Amino acid sequence: MATFRPGAESPRNLASTATFTLTEPRRLDMSEFVPLDTPRFVTGKPMLIAGLSERYISMEVTGIPAQWQRFSPHLGHIADQRGSICYGVCHDFGENGQFGYLCGVEVSRANNLPSGFTLVRLTEQDYAVFTHRDHISSIGKTTRSIWQMWLPSSGYQFAEAPEFERYDDRFDPQSGQGEVEIWLPIKK
Image 1 (cartoon, rainbow, N blue to C red):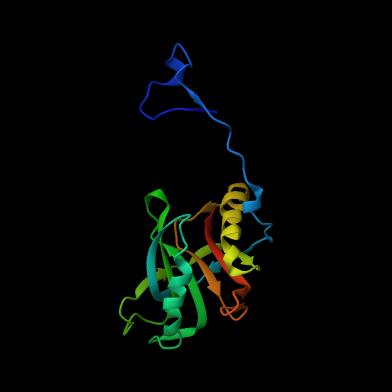
Image 2 (cartoon, rainbow, N blue to C red):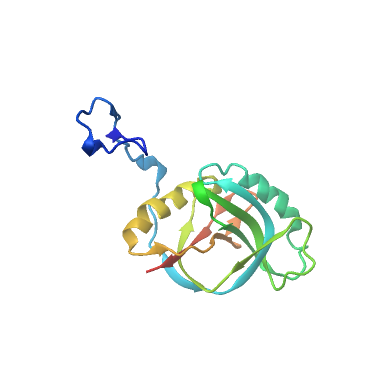
């Protein structure tokens, strides 16, 4: 595969290919993917999620477990918390793969939140919902499989809305085992 510098003269107009750098084609590493169950399709309800948010770059997410550890002492002590389900919300997508990740819970209103908390509002949205069944440390493989294998061949597009993980009583945060749902916002 030839590489071409942006801004350089088009390779079609060159008299010689001597200035090209040849490289091997990139091979897809299938060990980075996992088989996916057929997703279920859901119209998600509007929700207000409150919690701790940090910025990350797509493949550099090693700080997320520590972020959950900082958040966990707040569970059950957040004003107007609704239920015990936790959410890991990917939001505020920027250039170069940057995004915000919020560890949070649903709240009925945005009053009396602990210092440093951020709010993310989820609007009514169509989602493809996938279940991650392995240890939480391998959730990146499930996410990559959704984005790089399922989505391009699904007939759907990403809907430019927050994507989130849903942690209910099927997940054990002490062992990292159990089921986690991944909600991908979609449109036709």
